[in-house]
Length: 456
Ligand code: PEP
Ligand code: CO
Image (cartoon, rainbow, N blue to C red; front, side):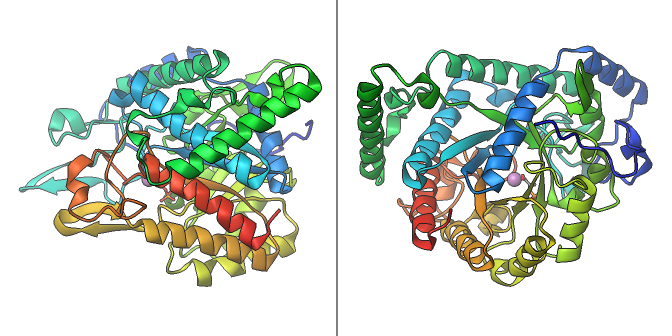
């Protein structure tokens, strides 16, 4: 891949976003301390390399062309406390099991992108939160402040930028070590078993897919008279919402012998729905980097807006550069998505289409508890496959919030979790995540649905 993204007007720089309106930013009381932390950050080694970023862009180009499927998943918000071995391995296990189901069912290579190793910043609907007459800054993710409702916890602390970088590095280092050490080898899917799932309602279908893959691998290896290490190895990429622009800027570097600028804090930054303004700072920042970039597309965004995003972020139409992640909600996807699909299709611009069936389906139940109904998540995903099939476009990925922990945050699924079950293991600090069984169920659903629309 040699295509280099040239910012449209030529006046892009890692700081040009500061000339645009930057919404959803933390207000640091101590600017000097912030500058000091950012300077330290920009002197630290990067978390990922330009080669990996270009490899992912190539894989996104393959997925854009219908040859691959992208599974992007992880926590809504990582927390510093969750940078712990069990939590990281369990999340990896779920993603590996889901991708195994997808590879087997879709007969396609799956690109795995974790919402981890840097998913620490969150957009909020309000800058401030008031409880019992006390008003404090809202919690904006561990990279900025802490969730406890005290002044000390909520005032943005620049030292957290350095902690976020360090925890991202630790997470990535552990993931890389597990993968390189053989944890993700398709010959050993038993490494990914989670203790409590022997009796999961879907365990049987999963096991039969595992067995089938094992048989196929052994069959091919018998024919080839050697082990097929290239095929049986899997890799992982990282992603996070590129929300905290000073942090992203500090990670934006040039590398030797390669043109352009790279965000070396993650392979795939994405622009959230609340920061996707065409003239806003987030779009300005993302248009100048070589990384593949995701953009969330939600209700209220029309075809002109989406075409404007593509023009700004990928004026040269480099395949694999932009993933549009639609998150409409089960109620409105049927009316709001088709005009966008048709306009983008007719423009001929290359786009990797992904569906996030989570963020348009968040609701509050008694006591203000945030949840999502599995049936709505399922419905949005199923409708997405149908709508893409009708438009003649390829749905090349799913973007999910999930965890390997046995939580009860979303209702429904094979065990039909109810509103009263939510209290049992509700742990998220931000959005409700699919638990292991619900995530695996969704992977199976993707396989069944894609087979029924005959996509790809
Ligand atoms: C998210 O992905 O956690 C998120 C906030 O999504 P969106 O920007 O689509 O609302
Ligand atoms: Co979320």
